[in-house]
Length: 336
Length: 288
Image (cartoon, each protein chain N blue to C red):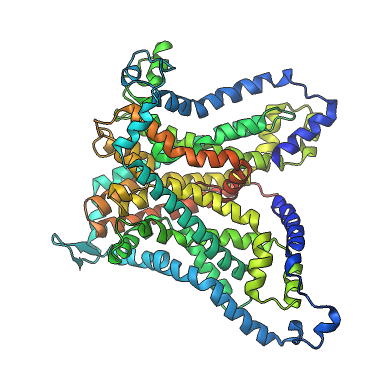
């Protein structure tokens, strides 16, 4: 990060002046009969010293991660082999939960919903690319303002976002249907119509994440060497042509990076479903994602064992889809 | 930053940018901006309407008489002040905890040489690869076992530790020059003194980036607080707002007023620290 190093050096200057108050560093002559110069310590002593300090610095976080993150992964696997009895307490059932899982039509449906969400979410990437390309127009005024405006949804609480869009999507008094009415289109009850609910929510997902993608693409486009465009312009390539044959191939690693993150995020969609759909919604079966199903089983219906098995399915799906993306990238990502 | 790079060539080319060329670009970008900001505009307008005004077909844009009392109703509908405080504690607790713990661990991984460092760091990274659903059930068990359900500790403690934060700050420490540490060591400073007096001030941009991301993630977090705290007086705002859905006694106007109030703190922070927010999120590449 170029900007990182720049700020680091300015920070260094501040430290040097700031530490003047504790300038107890002795003159070179006096150090000789002070303590032995630390540099002359044998390497093994430095090692032991480093080990001691590393333990002091790392142990708190290590313990926290072990207790709250690493052990839970193992524990989730163990829970997935158990079943909670009707009076609490759990018993070992081996692979029963997994056997049930494969025959569970509900699970397959939520998995299909999740994949639909993910495919729609990917449509946000071309939109973000177009916005970033327009924002990198040479000499364009107001780039900063646009960037802030496009970024606003990113900093907004998803629970609030869901409430806002519920109002906009409302079938009877929503502003979206009112606008459609003006152009002669009959709207619907977007969030409770089983045919539209998933796409309506996925559109909000795109809206929510667009700012992040634009900012990253913008930075990537800024990094494309100017000479490439000059050469292309000499060859008579217009702006659109330049975008296709120079910008896009050059920033393809960023596009890949964003698509991996967008897919991982979309596969774990929960907040928007929880706020914009919910079990009482007639369209809930068409919108329930696999994470929503995990939440439902684990924390509403008290089937921890089954929920744990679903969590492992989520892991497998994410790993598989990400691996597929890494495989496909060889066909379209160009590393300079 | 980025805009400087785009502006410089234009300024040197002809003194003033040729703007008529850009009208088409502006039209598209402004239309896009309306889609991005319009929902917030509608949120604020709705929060100031009477219930009757929200039901008119076609809808009116501006409220005839702004109903500021809708904002008061939020506090009658929910223990909103308490929830606001819970969100604040959750956010401040996690941010401060992670800044302290992750900067220590990140520094150690960047600078200390010890046996098994690579292995240990790999273990940290492995946490980053695992989707959060795999932590949730056991984390719940642990919090329940400690008797912490419906408490502030439940909201804060698991969020004190972060593999991501450790990784981010390690990367940042690696970019810093070693010379200053050497100088401080020659002056007889020990590792702790070097870390707190020399390295932490230098690492400020990295710390700010982590803090910004943590604020965003903590303030907006929904699933974890939903799972551990179901007592309204212990909920953060995200869960409080979500709990209003489907309650037919709550007006849209009140919901919108609540949404405005719940999003305002992070919004204000974003306006104040735009550059840090955008850089932080560009670094992590995601919001959650």
